[in-house]
Image (tube, rainbow, N blue to C red; front, side, top):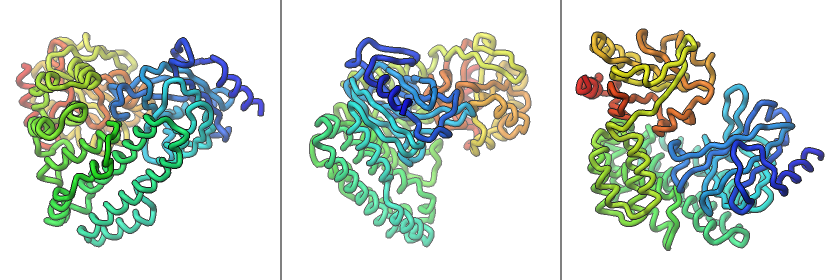
Length: 498
């Protein structure tokens, strides 16, 4: 009872122990909470709130501000600036062990919650999947939590889809998948309607757009990426059915809508998969150029949606080596100011000949290595983390390149992104992820995609290759992956710098 009293006092007075604070309640977001199970949060744990800028995707690490608050006596509180009327946050508990527990209502990974300037929210936390909200703005939070708990489709539907896929009944799988997605969509929209009187019209419409986008993004992604469609011919027949179907997104929206992040993601997923011809390819080998994507977006969309899809292309399709050719024309085309600013920020960090991030990272012996220390050499950086299956295949692809350039001014760096130093050292000793002769560095401590260096380039898939020239300038922040072409494209890129 004493803890609850302390939290409520903090909630309704202007108290904060966060890294940064703002001037008034009306210009900020206030969060306070209690962990109902004492064993769930321990001394030294920290609450993390990630604030997404300009309604970007919550997966775009380069457009996220991060705030922390210490957990004391199973409680926390933080005040953070609200730079927009409505914006998205994700919440997680950072354990002293290095484990990160996202508050995701039972989903996988982090999920974004739409909040508003001036909200004062109290969280009663059972675990990462069960959080109850009260205070100013709580109705929309509880609404979103209930919606997220419905998942993508029901458990009976999931079992039915697995059975159809296992029996290679592809036509039935496609039909049932669409039914399951749309059935759950109706359930979520009905739940949202129950909250209509308790949330503002603008928030209602934005959540509605997110629901539609979430469901159809899952439809396109699940359909096109399902391994069960690898059976010759069956996948292509099902894809043609989807091509010929009415525009599911616009049919579901059926009136003016808000371009929320999930809705933009759904349009993006639909567009990229409709452009792909060989549907068995991995992400790094999708068979359409960025130019093809750019021309399709320019021809088929307009206004803010076009601009957001162009921005999505640059942040998501960086593996396409022709991406930089379309920067200037995209910026000239953009009418949406927020999208243009975000793309200009992307160009400042990723475009060729931009100054590379001035990293300073520890090596195996504890001494630090910085970018200026390595001036005069072409740098090939391989980012990886312990447990990344694809990362274990990179040494075999890197080794021949190291042999080829051993007498040249080329230095190969292994950049580990584990949170714990001991984890990195153990993996390094196994030599599953590294090659003898690489300069081994790590982002431990602030590891993962939220380390400043990794976040600067928005890296979130691994392994990831980057090339920096002799002068410390970017050659490619997403260089060709040598696993897929015996290193030919990466070899050519390195040779051009010598």
